[in-house]
Amino acid sequence: MTSPNGPAAGTALDQVLSSNRHNSGLHWGTLTVLRVEPVTRSMRRVVLGGPDVDVLDRQAANQAVRMFLPDPAWPAEHQPSTEEQRPLARVYTVRELRAEQREIDLDIVLHAAGGPGMVWLEHVRPGDRVPFAGPRVHAQPTAGINAAVLAGDDSALPAIASILAAADPAAPTHAIVEVDGPEDEQPLAAPAGSTLRWAHRAGGPHGPALRQALEQLPWPDGNLEFWVAGELRVVRALRAWATEHRGLSRRQTHAYAYWRLGSSGIELDMDRARHSVATNAAPEPDPDAPDEVDVLTAGDGNNERHA
Image (cartoon, rainbow, N blue to C red; front, side, top):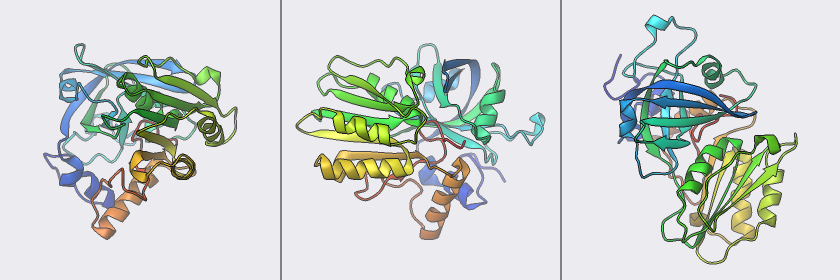
């Protein structure tokens, strides 16, 4: 069964991925892998290009593309096209768009789990062609605010880098990124008045170092927003902390779970799919719903920890 709009319906996950609302406004195309480069010891960059880069939004920060990855269990000559059911889809934030060169960078966190994203990253080579759908622009600080605070772990680094680079100089943006150590830091562009801080886990769990850095941050006054992304429980706790201790309303926070400790990206996909089908809910929940943390489908924002 094929569909001109993307993956065919079948399982609960297929119903979500092929729904009109989920695919509304998306373009379908194919990109060619140009280069694969190390960024840090924990992150690898895949540079892709081609004429279909033109469908991406030149003005948007924090936009994502859904890449339909090859299934290693299928012969290469029988890999499904964009119009056929392709279950191995992962969503990655565009770290940088170079529109004139028709190139994009996808920065992907390396981890031990052998899921589809990591298998693809291990075997991807220049010349490989990868179908995709996009772009989908995710939330970023609202225009007209006085300041913004961004926080996240390695998985949120591409989104934070994109938002920080596009920040309004009139509204300082203060970013904190939690990584394991100094070797995982990387230079990020930021306008004058904005700041970047690094928090180090040093082999410890996700969350405590980021929380401590947020507590030590001189928070700006006035009309500000808080954007946080990373592991589900950490994001939920930090959003609650920001509302309780910084006096922010829920509408002043944007909270995104890119991964969940102990769960694979596929399991996160299926959780959302089952909820959407069972409740007849919209497949894309309101990311700013007062009491919700948006659980983006596997790899949204770039790096499912269990890809």
